[in-house]
Length: 305
Image (cartoon, rainbow, N blue to C red; front, top):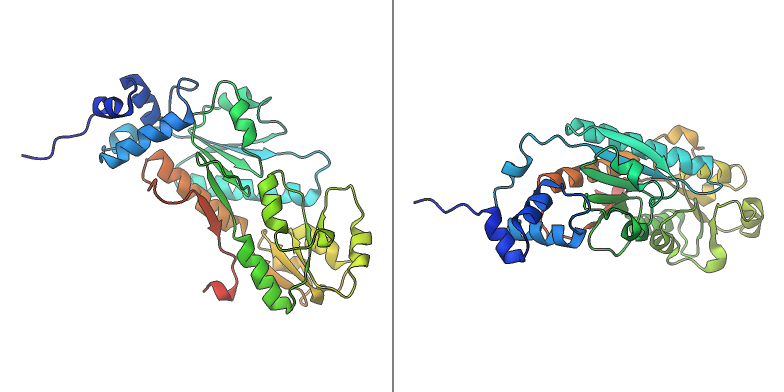
């Protein structure tokens, strides 16, 4: 005789919850009825028991919401970067048969009901903090993926460039350890810490409009540095010797820069592809819960092979 099929009722008994709660979790429904922690516990139990998840996902119409966060006084460079990232992600999802809607918002809590109005099966947050998620009403039970963000919350996947590797490559290419950093501001405080790791505080400049970029660059004449951001890199090149700069760029348009500059591509297309693949795995429950949920996308330079 063949192996007896696992039922939702068995999963409910193991998890100590109702049959309805298990159904909500495996079908990504029941908005506000269960917590993210309960949902993940049920999904992990189902996977450990080899529950045939295709029965919950076959024929299910999925839709993604891509949330592009705003910052007060944000630069054109940040806006262009996130718009391109959103469009790359939209294209990758469409290839997987998942239509999406792009929403620009300033406050996740205030705009939460507008987000739910599109009935998303998965939510992507571009450059946004995760703390606000705890305060949304009704509570979030939809799978959520943070892109160009970093946080320690084990409930969410994070997709971001491998900045430690990129910074190490910049030091190798420029032949110096004591580099300075110029970057667009980011909403994720943990990502800001990751970016500035290894730099002296006086050698870090976040281009948020509160300080003079020209004054910072003037104070660092004779030094070499890293710029994170395409349009910001173009601006810095106009005020600083390009041969003394490495730019971590995401738009995949090398024609923006003079030939003397060192380019370290971390394409939005690669992050979008990784994020879409994670979404597909989550929606079909085809993922390994023992694997890490912080995905560092390698930069496109030769040492990565």
